[in-house]
Amino acid sequence: MSPVVVRDLPEGEERAAADARMRELLSAPAPGQVAERLALLHFTGRRSGRPYTVPAGVHALGGALVVATGSGWRHNFAGGSAGELTWRGQRRPVRFTLVDDVERTAHGYLELYRRYGEAAPRRLGIAVRGEGAPGLGAFRAAVIRQGLSLVEVTHLPAADGTPGGDAASPVPTSSPVSTSPDPTSPAPTSDAANERTSR
Image 1 (cartoon, helix red, strand yellow):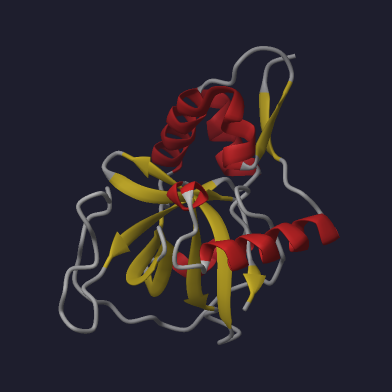
Image 2 (cartoon, rainbow, N blue to C red):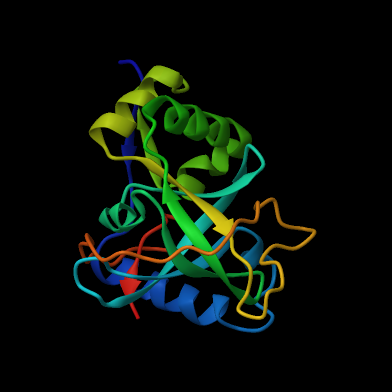
């Protein structure tokens, strides 16, 4: 059987407990090494108007910072939306943008999968069914059928006018944008699996 990529995430109480642990840990001033690969996304649901805080894995990809996810909350970022990111112990204004190109998303997942090796399923919240390593076609199918997506994160200038990025960050800077209300669908989820719980 050819390899098939599927989403693979904790469920129910296990996922909720993981979310709670990560929110607490990543909110600390000195969260440690875990904050190099995990962050908190802060945003407002477009339809609900509710604030959310999502623990998610972050990845350097093509000179940008991205979140890899298949969760419904990603639709809040279609066309771009302002929010905040807590990463490496600092909370900063950012713009979240859902990547809407299937080929670019599939290539991004394939690159991350190859980079992380055995840790890739845990880091990306996926599983591979079948024999052999998945190629571009398997990830393309997962983007289309499983909803695997990438969300780009762009730092914005802070309220005092200082740049949002830092020397160690691969994230480009941009100019401020405003949010516009529209879709979100609640569903609790886990840390490295890139999911969310309400704040």
